[in-house]
Length: 148
Image 1 (cartoon, rainbow, N blue to C red):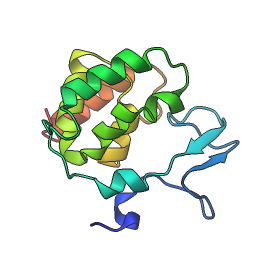
Image 2 (image 1 turned 90 degrees about the vertical axis):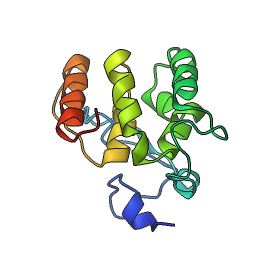
Image 3 (image 1 turned 45 degrees about the horizontal axis):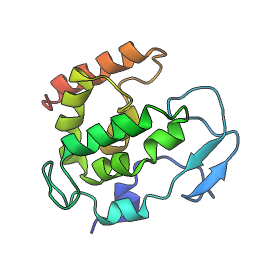
């Protein structure tokens, strides 16, 4: 299993602990400082990449994405969206799921940016303030990097 230091792509400040609430932290989309929760990704990292896009054990990407879309549309909190079990199961597929997420983003734009940032360790939408601009930036990144 890869080490936590190599596979945990979120940048944390010295002394920060996953699974801890940090008031005043920068939000997930580089918005103004806001209360931010650093979720613990230890369970997710244990299964990182252990599933394929059509895994029967964890569900297929399509069924998990549909479940997340249906249930997360009621959430106003990014934290609630990104910690939804289906979203977390999708992230657990590891970086191999990036093409499926980008196809989903192209066909049904939704807030896949957190998963993409986590899986790719990049953020081509950094500094963009509108949703459609972020979608375009990620899709362009996907084409440039041969994911779609």
